Image (cartoon, rainbow, N blue to C red; front, side, top):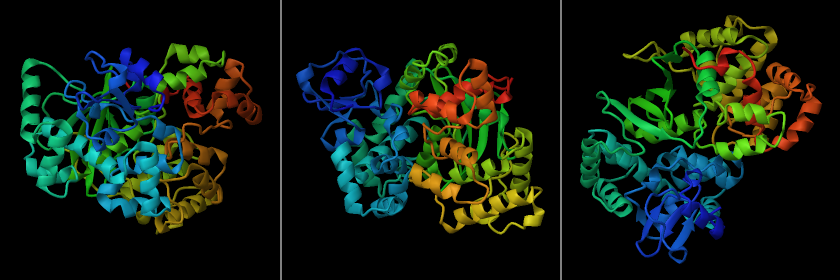
Length: 499
């Protein structure tokens, strides 16, 4: 996108918010970079240059616009669609891997040398992994400075900086303000009633409250309805208009509450270690599919005259995903050939027996979902499952625990499918639902799913898996979103926000 100058100029002139996060506009005369929808008068085209990431702008010597605050844009949807090395690297960087494991750790997860990863990212994004991670640290630092009363020294290390001096220098360079000036400006905006993309009312001590930006339209019904209807007792709940759940994080654990709003998702995070903030936000955005491009998705699906009425009636459906791919894979096996209620019951038993207890002063959350390592030594006789499904579950958790099966942001979607299908008890439905919701493949498809087949038949689409797959070729690469529209024709609770 950023290499198509004419298209970028049109987006800037029209202040098209759909492209926020897709590319950034750097102005040579002011040395400022902006989001495409920046409210100021657009510069002359000859003074613009376009970059794929904020890190690329910063590397070229531009600072963030104080008016449009480009670091608060939704993430680029390109990393959701692609499964190549650069896209997988970007998902890992957003997940905080570089801060925790360095560039060698990033490269090891992807199976390349650090030099190869550096070269590929520089060639496509104009910035290497360290610069991309630095831009993300700056964004996290600004968020903590403006939305919490944390001391600056604590913010520096929570955001992932190695020293307070580096923190101060980076904030000044990126935002052209000191950390103290950023906090003062934020306080001034609150005093005058002027909001921004992340600030909300003050939170209780120990809780970070922020807004997660989204691309409009956002239809929350199937998204939050699915999460609430399939919630595992003790790990997840719907309370006071918000989906709440526990999180296992690299440095500790947390509890998050996510509530849909007209133009954002309200997020309240309670963390045992503030260094997990970046990771927690990344997981929440992935869970709710907030970096999707709903306009592009819906435009493609509308080309099918039988799907078009569903899209027009409720545009902006997202794919409900997960905060932990391994957790979802276990739950997918527990949900094979049983009802939603039965799957929840099976998962709740595992949680109460093997999950790590947590305290939740605000609600009814009691445990973290057990890790593969905690489940690897399960006694088969203790599982109230058919013998074949016991074998499937134990084989899965064993492979996840010993590392022979890796599911996460770094996963190659094709390779992950092959490894899953090689496990006993894994067929197309289980593999594709994991690809859709755990790995984030937007083109995962479930032609054999009962709900999909029933909806297809009701719409006049082919109802047999083979014929439906052939028809769905026109929906690519968004077949996972087509599944959401098909599911939504049913009265199942997954399609409706709880009362």
